[in-house]
Length: 212
Image (tube, rainbow, N blue to C red; front, side, top):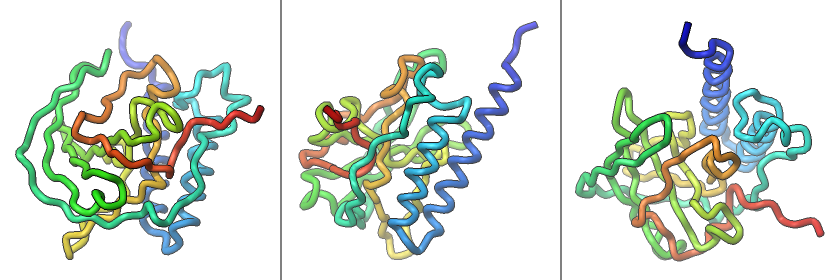
């Protein structure tokens, strides 16, 4: 009979739970740098040891974990959100079919530091979720050429909602590569053209530095 592999489904469920719990710890911690270290350490462990790791099985024993820039407090930024025309985008994601999302707000407060603003998207479908991908001046040289994600709340990557005063904290030290940066098994939605920052975001996940 056909159907989904039960063990694989259970492993994915567990992966999602661990990521959701990790981001809950990040949001709850009064020590931002300690929370970032926990984020780095937990992701390294999951990437090495978990069955749902995007790292190819043959490479996991020698994989030391995602490489990151040092924590930079100046890239923990507070922004305000302004509404935008709800432009709808559909992205093909391989065997998962098409992913539809629409723009629902744009930041104000990043231009001076990063040379641009970013649009936040709402992923449509059952439940939905916030999605914030971006490309910056490091993309393709110091970081993955397809850009990075900062928020993907459907998969648990949630740094916190807008505060009562209308402010939102975007901590770019928690930027990370999509799974397709590690394996051709994945087809990931990448940053739309409007989410390209002129400045260099040297925070979060980066490409490994050669040791030679």
